[in-house]
Amino acid sequence: MPLFSKYPTMRAWPEFFNFEKFGKPNNPQERLSTNISYYAGNYLIIFAILFAFTCLLNPFLLFGIVIVIGGGFGLKQYLSQQLAIKAKESKTQKRKQAKLNRDYATYYCYFALFIIILFGNAPLATCIFLSLIIVIGHGLLR
Image 1 (cartoon, rainbow, N blue to C red):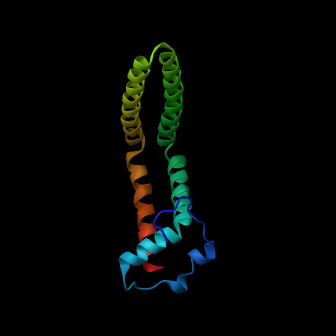
Image 2: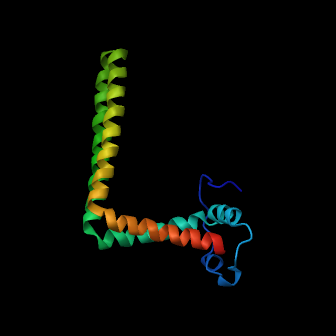
Image 3: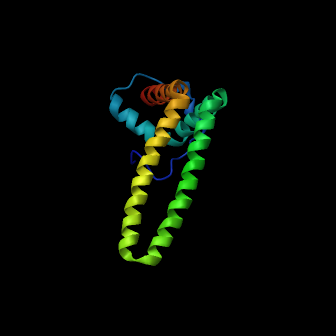
């Protein structure tokens, strides 16, 4: 079973929370990698729920994420228009614009990370930390 498949599978929640099968692992690394691939969909749902609660409890983080998503969509539209305009002129202009687009996209990624860290540093770190504790704890003991 590959560690990360293209589409994570969702397992039944009673199977996921069957505490009778919890125990000390003989080979922790193998058990963790097997369980992470086997329960990947469940772990993703748990992270999504924790992330939703984090966003609801911290409106600044939610605001920052909305700004980042909206700005990314707007930047994508603008850059695709600019590329289409330059493509009509010449191949050299199209190449220059494509390089400029990559630069803009890189700078936007830095800006997006800055905005999310600025508006939700502690709550987001708590969400990620709790998700890691749940995933590693369940993956090792299940």
